[in-house]
Image (cartoon, rainbow, N blue to C red; front, side, top):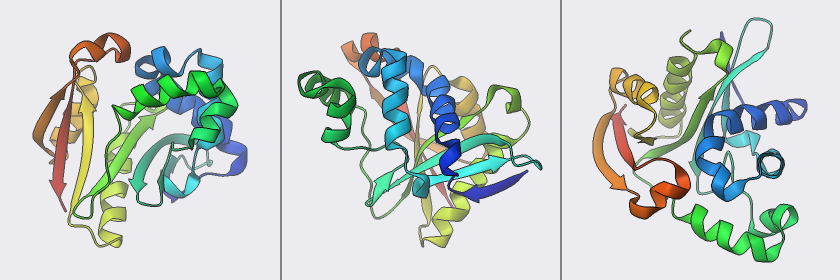
Length: 192
């Protein structure tokens, strides 16, 4: 397995599909229907904020995204959203999505999502991507990596615990849990 920066333009659809397979269940109520949400994600993906795991044949196994002041793996503008949903429909969607946004900060490097194809799970891909995120953070001069994990993803939480991330805070969604399908998100930090 090898880890590379970015993805090829011809992989954009596959990366979007992989992203939606993992994050679609929590985003579908706001970003659905699926075909529209998937098209939006495909359109706004930024390969400069991606680390990709590939097998020896070059097949995409998984992706770890990160967020900086310059952008995020899945970003986009209000205009991008309006292109897919129309301006009126975009307003309430942007409002709800903004409630899940995590701010970048100077002190910690922000991992902004990790997703592994179903056939590659349990084979060390997530660990390799997490290590690559830590390496990327070091290269950029950071001493800590920050991420958030939702309560309905115990497998990811177990990985982060194993890799030395420490839970620092838990944010409860309250009534928004009915929209996003999870009750809380825990912020975790690792000193590198």
